[in-house]
Image (cartoon, rainbow, N blue to C red; front, side):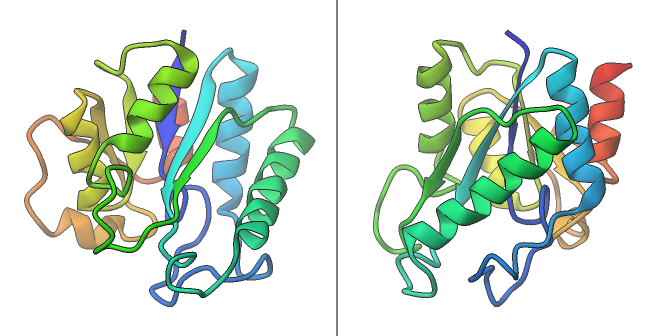
Length: 176
């Protein structure tokens, strides 16, 4: 199975330090939607693992989050692709869950869903927490410069981290 796991905010859509709280605030990075569609058409399964502490903080509800993910699926489908499993952590940073990145619970959930191993699977994110989650389960950490990626790049990266301008560049590499 060709599996690629993506973070959401900052990788697929624009990020905000004030949180993405409404469907109108969920603004896709156009090249990311096309990249997911291209990968899907080439036989890749593209899954998403996203921290969504705005739910715990009361900024938005599950229905709003689901509407964002429905829009993502619709936009990718309009370009001939499909999005695989989307998992989210609704917890706040102090809730002690095992799913909130940098913990790898969501990545393990995706692996269990697809009955696959995570070793070597690319996990694409824009934060140190994404990279740490990847390392915790032997995924290949991949940093994109979109979202918080440039800020993350200013700090030391885990050894072996691959760096790309954006998700489109990741897709170009995987499809070449």
